[in-house]
Image 1 (cartoon, rainbow, N blue to C red):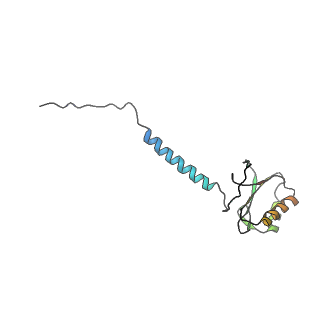
Image 2 (tube, rainbow, N blue to C red):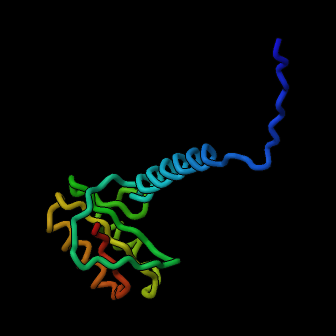
Image 3 (tube, rainbow, N blue to C red):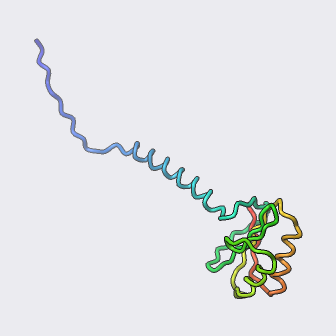
Length: 130
């Protein structure tokens, strides 16, 4: 009868390919989730622009105009008079981001721009998607 010899295999290295696969899947999940979170608080569909340029500002105030024509200052729904009062307390050097839904009325956009011009706000950024 033949004798079987026990063979011990020594592990000198660790197979990291399954670990890399798991990390790539987690990375894809995080990046996908981050793009949805980045859209903002108020759900609006931004218009497109060919020459869009992203500006990073530390101090900024955001005004939203949704498809129904409702105006929001940060997260709070306001009318035009309240918006003007809130913007008058904002420093002129502070950046104002305007996010207007592409389905909103142009008159709503013009009304907000009118207030900003009357209050001499010059740091205005109209947010679009590329």
